[in-house]
Length: 544
Ligand code: G16
Image (cartoon, rainbow, N blue to C red; front, side, top):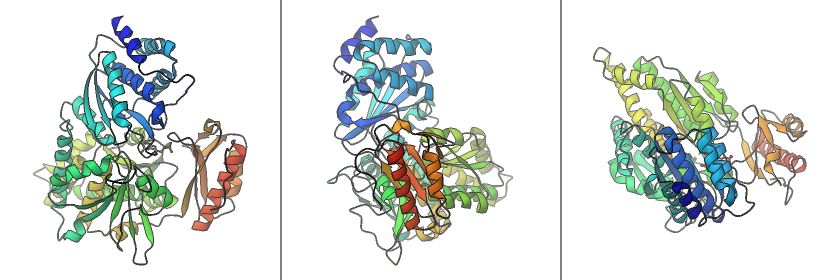
């Protein structure tokens, strides 16, 4: 077929380094940018097949999110803005790892297995973050798309969640919104302004928020969006990319893992601050108290704030909708306890990776999902959305009920339901704080986090670690879980687990305990056990 000839010809311009093997990880492929040219070309091909198969527009985002600037990566976006279906992750890995002479066979294999109709039209939309390598790599994606005859639209510089939004808008034919960056700003800011104008006695101080843009795309897009917010939010932007390096000593991942403020932001006591990550799909909040002590409000605190707000509104609106929160093993023990015991909300634990949480959250009328690292959103079922809409327009309902339903309706419009979105999440949080008249320390006081620590361990091959029970138990290598159990027993209120990262070449270690000292020691001891039992390389972990 002429089409395949074109693929072979163009593929030779994007040769695969012989022997290089990459895995579709937690969120697509991620590695050093110089090793990704062939992957980008091939993901362009795969997206065309996926588009033909689903008869929908498919998205490709070129980004390595929280990883260092030298890395890059690619995330594929399915028709309704969700992450790529698991079976296709498998195809992605096969295609990315096929040696040059085996590429056509791998491609034809997918076509056959999925019975792809090659006569069907295909459309792929592409976006990229601000990494120096992203522009060229996104051109390579387009080369892949074109070589299989797919149509495309290049959105250029966008946040990951904006690209997810575009895909969903296109495939719902505008029902979800207008598939442009301006359409996104309009939809989200209109809902935000509708909510905040109902909050009384807000001063400029209340409206003020310091934002760390991680020197990435989120900073750029927030600047663009400011004009749409009608001065309902007054942003001071730091790490806006004008001088600093992407994710370096700043950004949501840095703040969450280091449990300290990013470089370049000056924090006065009680001031609300937040950090985006490199592609603006994660957000964490923080502040310094009067004694200068740093307080982090991570994904767990965000999930708690949002689910409490929604639950209260459902009661006020007289709506009987089932609400649940989905977390991962990283969720702080205190947050789970608070949600279950005080809030009386159902809590579920999923494996790390938005795709897993998203999937679980879809089972409820309202599914709030957040990873502790600040990646999350809220999903509303069609039935749930419809009931909210009906109640907001119900002339026979008491004013109080209708008003609560209208607030819920605007909240639905404010949330990017396709994926975690730092900008939209930030506006949801700001609106809730405004409507409830809460200061950041009052939000923080909902519950107290158990002291915790996250560490990374380098091993020769992180695949030797296999986990079960939503990553809370290591089933291999032998003896590792027993060692962890014995260590955990030494401390009170303690918990620890290990898992191989799907975005970095490391094993992640998480520990929590009654004191920071104990959490630090437990994390160190578990790291040492990983190092010794799972083939550690480089320097042995040291006590903190
Ligand atoms: C990605 C995923 C997140 C995950 C994070 C870290 O985030 O989307 O769900 O929590 O990687 O994953 P891991 O621990 O497997 O490295 P991002 O923001 O980097 O795309």
